Length: 310
Image (cartoon, rainbow, N blue to C red; front, side, top):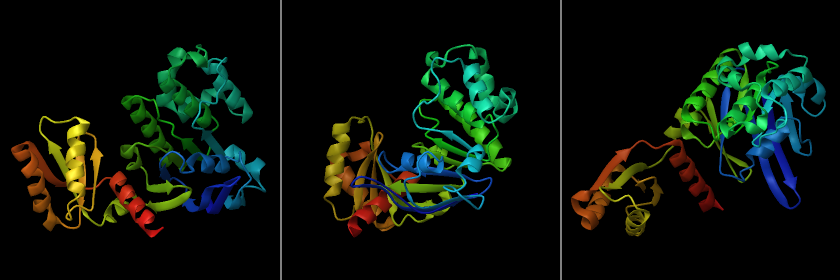
């Protein structure tokens, strides 16, 4: 178990973390989400014992992270956001190095991460700098798992990985969760966040939301409407419609969502009013329907509330 209480970190005049608190239980996955600059990587460096210039306390299985750093480190597997393995070593040599650092056997990866290692095995004699971005991520994960840590800290481990490999990664993580491993993973992929037990939304060094995906979705206060224009997918057409809707009293917010617009209404009673506004511009070409919000919709709404309060 990892317990973080009121974690604060300052870099000169910049306050990177502003009182982060959460608990990561045994056999639990927490997805950390937030825009670049939210403080995610700073938090991961602290939890990985790489930065102790912070205020607040972190406890791992009841032991203080600062005072018991040496005994806690073997419990942690860490994959930083940037590739940090040895590019001039082969896959096997990198795995051997990290295993030996923890008195583990490199062959343990066969049981610790069978899916990922199976896909890397044919390239085991290749130098790491010859790997694709996705394969580098897989190798980083294998090196972090080889010593069977009880805590995994994964900073955007699936960036640059193809969808099938992402599925393999999450299958591995689910297996590790069943074994009692605690996993903190940062991601920009909403579908990944919904697979976690809890989601920690960060913004500018603060926690905006921390709960299960289901309970976070239930906090959405409004009616969300998806609007599309048949045959029109260019940004100019969507921006024109967004501008029109933004000036109407029945729309609280409106923003682009791929080839669609998402309009926020106070209640379902305003949906027909919004649809009428759209049809006056585009007639039968327009499609308007009420949809369930995503985690990103909730995040944007929460962020809007935060800005209004400041």
